[in-house]
Amino acid sequence: MEELDSIPKTLMENLLGLLRVRVKRGINLAVRDVRSSDPYVVIKMFNQKLKTRVIKKDVNPEWNEDLTLSIIDPNHQVKLTVYDHDTFSKDDRMGDAEFDIFPFIEALKSNLSGIPNGTVIKRIQPSRENFLADESCITYANGKFVQDMILRLQNVECGEVEIQLQWIDLPGAKGIAKGT
Image (tube, rainbow, N blue to C red; front, side, top):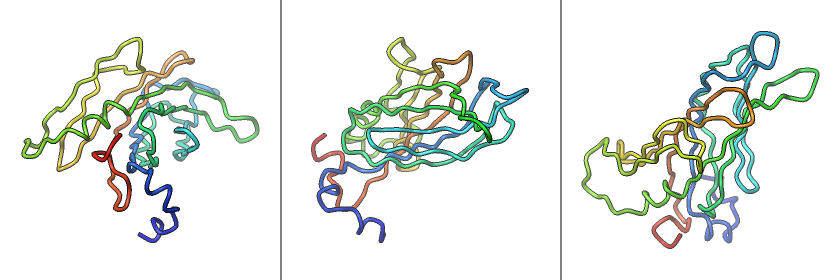
């Protein structure tokens, strides 16, 4: 854990933990090249920006890639944007979505010792206030909390992105239970 030693102590004291965002796949993404697109995903939260690899010529790409955000304030929205990679011009936007991690953080705070594997802790319904294409469930599985989401992309004619959230506790970090 050498990389943790390089994090300033003040940051560690304010850090709640890490949020692993597994970018699973794109569904029916928009065509931005002649017959297809070369999509990749950018995830932004506050001053952090992470991106997946480019998948060539595929409007239903399978990334199955983990991007990890440091969480200091669970009230910040996470913005997901899909781009089409272009070699000789600016990459084209293929839609975006935002998601709220607060319900996930709240579920982590609940003391649920002894619950069976696969228990659904919370269900979040699609609404005008969120970008969900389908019900999102926060589930307790294999000793961890996970939240599966299918996000409907905005500012584009079609497309969805499937992601999964998972929490990572860090030794020396403020943590969830200690006051968010």
